Each structure stands twice: as structure tokens, then as C-alpha cells.
Image 1 (cartoon, rainbow over the protein chains, first blue to last red):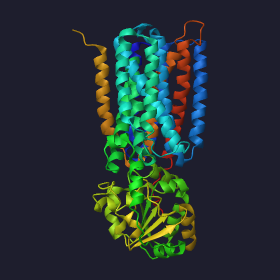
Image 2: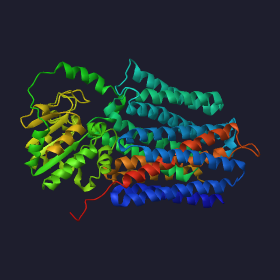
Image 3: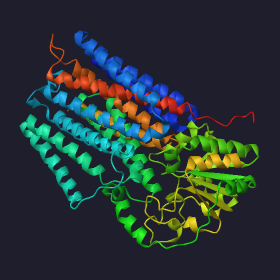
Image 4: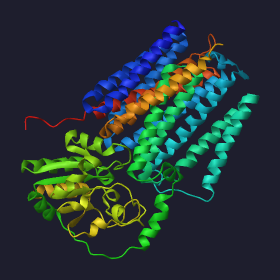
Length: 464
Length: 102
């Protein structure tokens, strides 16, 4: 296959990838978009086979390894529960990162296969691109592994900080730049290995200080990194499909990180520099005062809801932990039978990754046109009779609007307290991730329901 | 004077960042999780590099020091391609509209 033809076909697959993302602008077109993505991938892989044109025994092994990876991926995709989606995405990011590192290593060892020169005499531009691809790939890999371990609960979600952390990270980053410069002049393979090792270390160090509830930002950021790594390799291989995709994924992840940071009213650097939960948790517990709360049981909750004409549900990460989405949906079905209007309000940072709650509700067969974003629904709380908060906490805290001293001041929150009555399902009065007390607990119109989210929801349904 | 092909690739790269910027802003927030899984799947197009690396061995030698890295990268990228697209499809199949017949 001529080089020009394959370049054009790579461009086609790049365009198909753009259409795949474009499809996600609405759920109706999204499935078609995914199909475009698959076609784009098939084209890219086929063109690569044809342009290498080497159908020797190596080709058979390529197919075998492709089948091994493919069946493993398919198996995971079918088995994974929707609540584990953040872990899955973090895990997948690490694979992209590691694949980028491997491709870069291979190109470094055998540059002639990629038309990049000969070992020890690699073209300068290619060497720089290779070093960038490998470094970003390695950072993506180790960072995603840490994010995965934290999300899985294998590693504590609490931020791990130590003195001089930021200084160390900065020094390592400078070291990487210096190594790249030396690598270009000496072409030494030892330098290349050291460069990769330090990048692994950086990925590890930048993710360990970041706490559990900041995971939406971390996952989006790693998504972005995996894109830039792919783009770096794309430049090395002079491959348009890879360059386009890398740019798309890189900007996609960056935008998601921005949206998540905005949802928490924090700057990107503030999140990345970490330590938020650790410092504020202590101050929060010191100021704790005993204030009266009203608590109720499933019977009270059912009574309130039965007499309501409209109910807004506010789900959060706790719903995912308790796997309460199906029970919730059953409760809503019962409410609807009694002609009660029900809608769902989703905060941008609810859950552990962007859009996490939407997927869980979709899994429980909640129609997506009953689910609303913060800006769409926030004015409706004033007219609603009951707000049912299940597994959310900080995102409903009115302190964000009233107390300039509060660490979450300025964060956009759901105006839950404007409802006639608020039902708050929670295990205990303990503060949320931000480590601050939720004023909502002590409001006149709030009824605390102390129980496991799933069990409480089921009990309410029985009492309706 | 001839323009270095690198400049063309850089142009594609920069323009794609802008395309990505506008396309991703138009993605509805409720589909942000599928967006992440699908971007994950498409970034595995890095498999293109992995295949070239795997087939780089000289005649008769399938597993050379450089091709082994290629084969490993193929496995990783394949997990991602199949896993990413399938899990996206599984998620998207769940997004349903309210039934009209009620």
C-alpha cells in the first residue's frame, strides 16, 4: 500500500474518531458515535497491517496477542459492575500509558523499523518526541495505577503528604528536562531508561497526595495525559490518526478536569498540590458543637413523601457505595404511581468520576430526561415539597453560600434547603469529605434518616 | 524553501486540539462517563505503533528485543480497544428516554 494512500486512510480514521466524540452530544446519537469509533479503529489497524506488508510468522503472533488482549478486554467490559466504572477507567488509562512507553522503547531500540535512523544515530526531532511520549506515558501509567488502587480501596483514599513533596516533584521534573537534553546529545540508552524510571516515580508522587473525593479531577487529568502520550508517539511514528486522537483525548481530559475543578470551586493547582482533606478534617472536628437534629424512620419519610406533590432526589457517592440505585428506582416507581412528580438533581462532582451518577441511574432504568444538572434544576427546589438526599453531603451544604470562612465557600451547591422538607439518608452525623459539618443537618425542615442507603430506601418503599 | 513535514503534523495537531475543544464542550454532562471510556478506547489507536514494533524483527526472528515490547504493547492496547468500546456500548445502551405510553 502506498504511503500516501495509508496516510489518507489514517486521516479518515481520525475523522471517524472526531465523529465518535461528536455523537456523545446526545444519548440518541451516542450509539452511532461509538460505532464510528469502532470503524475508525478497524480502518487504522487494517491499514497498518497492509502498509507493513509483512505477513510472515510474526503476523500470526500479532493476531494471537491481539486475540488474547481483546478477549481479556471484552471479558472485563461485560463483567464490570457499573459502580466500578471509575476503577475501570483508571485501569484502562494505565494500559494506554504503558503501551506508549513500550512503543517508545521499541522505537528507541530499533529505530530503523520506524524510519527514524539507526541505533545511536536517531533523528533529533524523533528522539525528543520519543522521550516526551515515553515520559508522559510512564507518568500516566504509575499515576493511574495509584488512582486505581485508591479507588479500589486497596490503598487508603486519604491523601499521603510529606515535607518537601512539591519541591521533590519540581526537582524531578527539571531532572527529566535535563536528561532529555543529554539524551539528545549522547543517544545513550542508559539515559533513556533512567528517564523512564524517573517518570514512573513522578506519576506515583503526584497522585499519592490527592484524596478520594478529588478523584474526578485525577481521572480526568490522567485521561488527558494518556492523550498527550499518544500524540507524542504519533509524532514519532508520523501517524495522523494517532496525532488527531491524542489531541482529541488530551483536550477532552483537560476540559473535564476544568469542569470538575469548577464544580468544587477550586483551582486545578489547588487540587493537584493536594492535601485538602487532610488539613481541613482536623479543624472541622475541633469546631464541632452539639446541635439538635431531628431524626426519623422509614415510616416518617414515607408519610412525608406520600403527601408531597413533587420530590427531587439528590444522589451522591454514598448511593454508589450502598448499591442503592435499583432500590431507589423502585421507590420512585411507587411514588409515580401515586401521581407524585419525581426528578433527579446531579451535582457535577457527585461520585468519583464525571457523569458517574448518570450512568448508575441509567443502569437502574431511570429515563435520562428525568435527570437534571445543577443549573437546570437548582431553581426548582424552592417549589418542591421533598428533597431526598441519598449519599450526597458536601454538595448540599448551604455553608458554601453563607460562610466565607468555610473551605468550601463559593462552591456551587444544590439549594436543597429551600425545599419544604428535606430527607437526608446518612449513616451518621459525621462530616463529609471536606471535613466540615453540614448545616443542612440542623435545619428546621430537615429530617435525618440514619441508616444504610439501600436498606432505608427499601423500607420507605414498603411503607408507601 | 521546502516546509518540513513536521510543520504539517504540528498543524494537524494544533487544529485537532481546537476541534477536540469544541466537540467535547458539546458533549452532554450526563454522558461524561461514556466520554471517558470512549476516549480511552480511541487513544489505544497507539496499537498502530505496537504492530509496527512487533513486526520489526528481521527475517526468521519473530521475537527480537524490540519486537517483544511491540507484542506486549499490542496486548495492552487490545485490552483497551475491546474493553473500552464494549463497555461504552454497554453504558450507552442503558440510556433510555421516558416511555411515552404512560
